[in-house]
Length: 492
Ligand SMILES: [Zn+2]
Image (cartoon, rainbow, N blue to C red; front, side, top):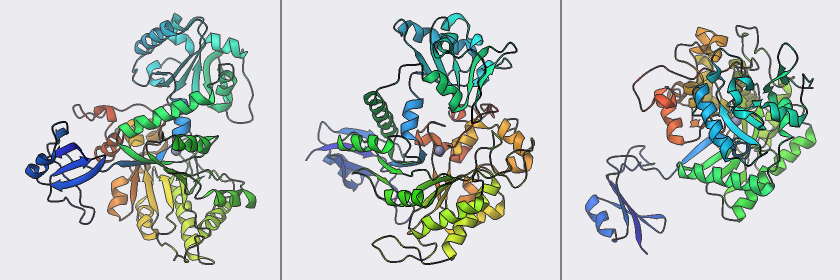
């Protein structure tokens, strides 16, 4: 047994008191905490090869958990050249030029994280990127992950030469002459061109996922709540887990969509508890609305464009019924609810489920009391709510799952961004009320919604405390924030 790591001048949280332990040093043997004590005794335990770190009063935690992630789709979306650090067109052009030189002739260029604000007042179109992409089939994902910019060669290979019609709100954006500008809005339009590119093999997708999860673990995450089980996600988790390549614990919530019937609901209930050594299905994800940016949230009063007036469920009473069924089956729900009306309806439904009908049960265990810890429902995002709604979280024992960096990085402190302008002063002033929820006694969990926002947990926690853009946290205090494009859609 060798002491491999010694931490000195540490502040060690005491879960019992909520404060800190009197000990300030810690020794690790074979990956486990072996001793706590004062600096002198612990230093004596260190053998010559041990790593000794003076933490200068920093807090030591056993690991952090991201409350809202999309690992599989995130690993796919963040494939290729990272453009998220490029803040103007010149930077984008030079990054693309470097990548083009690396590519084999005829190979596709994939990039992600393109901020539409780099185009300034110009339209977002491939012509703005200049000759760098001439003859290169390229697909540049915009940072909202719902739109793409395709190069002329990519459009040609895909046979896309004019406007198309779709059975969902998607668009191949065209100029006045009917020629595509390269901008593709929403999945159906993006897929037209994506299909023409070589598809990653399953082995490649698995490798990308493993790499993304390793990077999360390296950033300090020991767990994450995966808010979907889409596609072959569960198979991939199983394979990685069995191969010992799952570096953090995952709790997975598959989606329950409007229109779900009794069989669909039963299948979701039966899926609960599936899992392996380090992952398991626990909970169901529902959507009560869309987003404020796109005018698809559900607000008590319309936004300044007269939008965000409807629930995502055509019949909100059906949602209420589904929550009740899941509650009775002992399944915790996680509801995406961004607008004030969506949050209110989700809370009303949970309250109704807790107070009506037969006692909820978990199979193989004793009946639980309504509102007891056995079925912990949660609401995701909660972007704008009035005081009386804030109070209900603690009263009902509903967990508030918040993504503070969506506030810090996608809105502006002076309320000139799309999100704030749509809501108006009063409602924009009730943005992401993490602290108010906490003060009102609610359990608040923090997360990133990666790939919508970066997952490094220290940045997420800093966002909750400082409410300033991530890129400004290390510099002087400013109100600079990224402008949100009108079609940004976050919080899937
Ligand atoms: Zn999400």
